[in-house]
Length: 99
Image 1 (cartoon, rainbow, N blue to C red):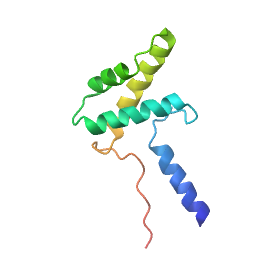
Image 2: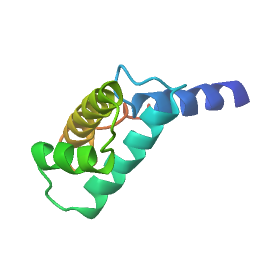
Image 3: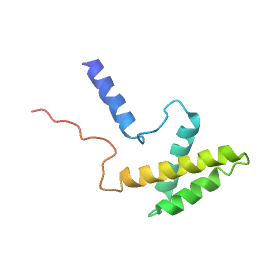
Image 4: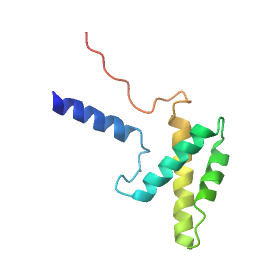
């Protein structure tokens, strides 16, 4: 039974990330957390504004680094705004009920 509960928790945790999220990349975790905070603290933020504010937080000098954070910000804003608690789509599948 403990194994089933653990697998369910892992499944829920993975379901909250965008499909191409790299769980081993600290930068992706950082961008995800910052976007989550940005959306939570800025009611009604648009995807465009989310991307711009996220990009401003990660204003990096090296060209390839800036391109990467721009991409991560865009993907994370899109994912969280489309699948967040304020949207119609759930962030994880519903829990099955048993009689």
